[in-house]
Structure formats: C-alpha cells, structure tokens
Image (cartoon, rainbow, N blue to C red; front, side, top):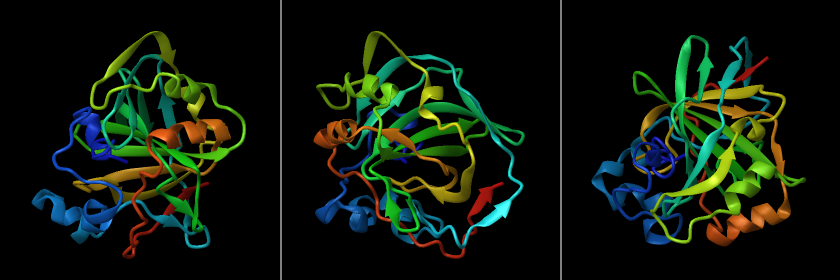
Length: 246
C-alpha cells in the first residue's frame, strides 16, 4: 500500500501522482535503503509495526471481529501511473464500515507480486483499496489475486493504462463498480501496520481478505509489462497479533 495510498499508492491517495523523493524497489534506492533516500523516511527502517507481513495461519487468533460492511458505488474511471504503480482514484461516496468506524474509499492500486504473504506464499497480484476515516486514520483492504479466470473490472483498468506517468486520465464512458473486485467470502485477517511505501507511516489498519479472486495470466502479464516488480519485502511482526474473523 502506498502512503495514504502507499507512498506509493497509499500516499498517492491524498496526493495523486506525487512522491517526495526518488525511491525504487531495487538497488541503492530500494527498500533496504529507503530510510537513507530522505530523512522523512526514517520510519521505514526504525518502525516497529511495518507492512507488509507474512501471515502464518497457524499463528493467527480467531476473533469475533465485525464484518466489513462495503458500500461501494459505481464511479468514473480516473487512472494514473504515479511512477510506482497503477492507481485508480475514486470519487467521494464509497466507503467501508468496520464496527462503528466509517472509512471513505480514496483509491486502489496494484502490487506485483502481492506484498502480503500467506504461509510464505506471494500471490501474482494484489489490489490495495485505500480508505480514510473522518479523523484521518487509514484503512487498507487487500484483495489477493490468483491466476485463473479473466476479471472484467481489471480488464477495464488495464485496457486504459495511461501513456504518460503522473498524469491522471479520466476515461470517458467507462465506469467501475468495485463490488466486482470483491470475493463472495469477505472473511479477513486483521492487524495494525504501516504504509508499504515511503514514508512507511504507521497506525494503518489492515484488512486482508482471506479468499483471493481470479485474474488471468494475460492480465497479470499486462501489469507486469508496466511494473515487473513493485512489492516491498515482508517485515518483522515484532510481537504483533494477527486476528482472523470467524
């Protein structure tokens, strides 16, 4: 996830297409060096609740967690390649509610392979749906994507990839309904984490849906032509508890 998008996508949530310093996913500006790219990125190295993580299902705690209530409305397709991922910015009006807390959907974006792992396994793709509450707290719903059947919603996005980076493009006549991205089974893993991109800010609520959706090999390859790899390595749990909804 990018900052408030993952500064990547999470950061991009608040500031589409903008990133404060040049960081990458490899080499001297890659994840192991993010903290040295900019003094504002120190949490990437010093933080204690960093994301992504490896979810070991034998270690998770079953809990009576509230169901995530999804209230997603059809929205026009507004897409941007922010230099770190492909991101779709969502018009106001879509949200999730978890317990008594409501989070407005800001944007969603992709990572290849999935940043979060389950029992050490990474999926070919993941979509991070970035939300923000009225009091400024971030919540990310992660939808894991496995190879299988073609997913029409993803096709609509990938068929309209921007030709230029850092310029939002509004695609006339095409709308998206994010309900089509969600699996029927909405059970989830829950933990406290961070943005998965600089500045790696902590205090992010993560909801990783247990059931992956299917995307085709062609769709995976299509994203891979733009970003062959844009996933941060998994980070230490440092004693965090991962809960799973019943």
